[in-house]
Amino acid sequence: MHVLARLSLLGSLALMLTACEGGTPGSPTEPNASASPGASANVSAEVKLPDPTDIATFVGFKAISCDQESSLKSSQGSPSNIVVNNNTDATIKLYWLDFNGKRVEYSPGGIKADASHRQGTFVTHPWVITNANEECLGIYVPETTDTATLNVNKTVDVVGSVSGNVSGAVSSSGITRQQFINLMQCYKQKLPAGASLSVDVILANVNSIPDSAFAGANFDVQIQQARAAGCTI
Image (cartoon, rainbow, N blue to C red):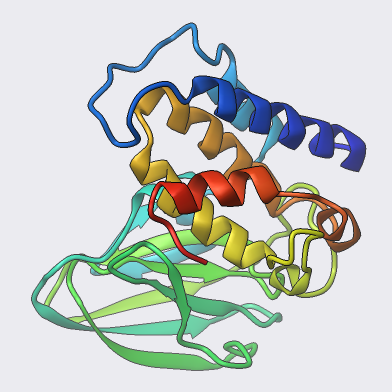
């Protein structure tokens, strides 16, 4: 998808998000099929996410698609251990999704090619594997109190990806890409289901625009809305 098209999409979704917000954030509302027609179709048609079962083989894990990241967070569970083996020729990164669903990196500098990382964790805690650009390749949740093993066998570039650290770009609103993603993930939890569909599409597309385009984007309205709903950067 071209950069200008992605920027146009993000702008349109911001308007959709504002328009969809009627009523109190977080109030129970049935999904409105007519509120954002084609929103889910845009995700599947425009964003080609990796298949986590194609990215890695594993024992003791449940694999979850990257498009579910915004709905995942850690909860209380039994102690477990995980081992991540990087069988690729590239650096990968490992993130824990904390109790608020925010990424916390557990691989400073990344897991290098042919290296392994052992980590204590808990059953039900989601772990995100990304490429060097911090683009999600798969999400894996340990299901055993024994050691769960994850063999990452390939990395891919997500559609529209660019070289460099995508979380390093700072928008004209003074917010980094990862901060914006974390803010939108929090905001989604505050919205009725019909409005949250628009946030899903924003989250699916924001990592795929180049740093230069992200740096020129203004998210003041979304930041104000998220903060008003109780989210913080």
